[in-house]
Length: 188
Ligand code: SAH
Image (cartoon, rainbow, N blue to C red):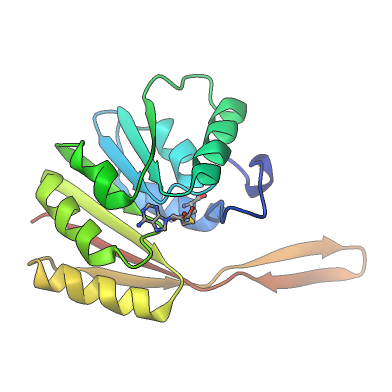
């Protein structure tokens, strides 16, 4: 487990996905060292770092070259073993074409490609496969749920509201994070 402050950040790249959400995704995915993971929209590498240290293999895809660079910086800083990580600078739809037999698909960014990405993920996911989408926009949450239903899944939706306390001399000041939707589904 890593802390948010462990990650190198850049104003050009969103992330890392916050600690409580990373922890929930690790738990809900039930990731093991047998699993092949894809991280579509790897951003700063928050999820890549967590899942690389637990999975057999991770493919981290981002269309933004700066995101690939930030993910590279963070895996260099935080992970001893990086042999199981492949960084792919491409649109999710392009990057996914090369990958088969996926156990866990993390989707943390999709732009306007969510439907195409989910079509491909569905095609590439094996029979034990799990999908976990993190979304900030209300629209993305609704679109993800409806698309997964159309693909024959029975998706679950959790809205996570986290506040962290700053412990000051005169008391504890709470600071709320953005609410994050986690849309999850299992192959069957
Ligand atoms: N989970 C990441 C943060 C993700 S931010 C972390 O922990 O750091 C979302 C990322 O998705 C951005 O870097 C953005 O460039 C990427 N993205 C958005 N649409 C994409 C697409 N269609 N294909 C690939 N990457 C995409």
